Length: 181
Image (tube, rainbow, N blue to C red; front, side):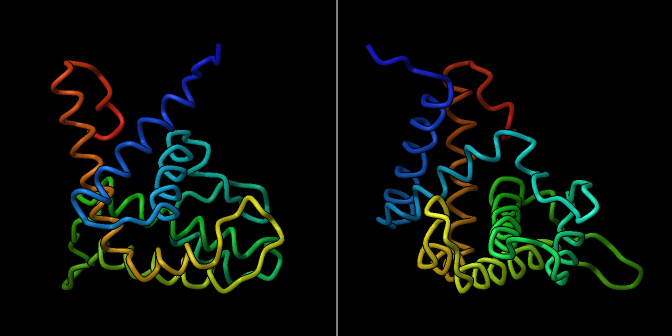
């Protein structure tokens, strides 16, 4: 009898949600894309994944601006992974927590954090798609290119996944909505 670890149950849950939302709500039948979204959601359930890109001095980079500055450094060993992480963070925040990126006043002008995150995420995925890697665990350049091209649609898919998650928690009276409330 095969054990059902929490990680496998979480993968099954996220895979079902991702496939349902992308196929039914968005009309997108792309298993590589939905698998990537599922894997990203699983990775981001661990807070240490949000901070896994380290500054060359060994400190965690948790702000998009700091990560973007790091891309300009030649010492970073894996630029593809760094750009992919920037794309993932931007996609995660624009899809799961878009309300946290509302325009905020800055002096006389308003900053459009949501638009900035979308632009940086698309750019990061596009750059990552063009960089080569020998790691077979990494997604293909074609998947990263589709994420760049369809960034806003993927963010909408994540927003819908969050809504489905919350509705499911409300229907069952459970606490599964804690992460995405």
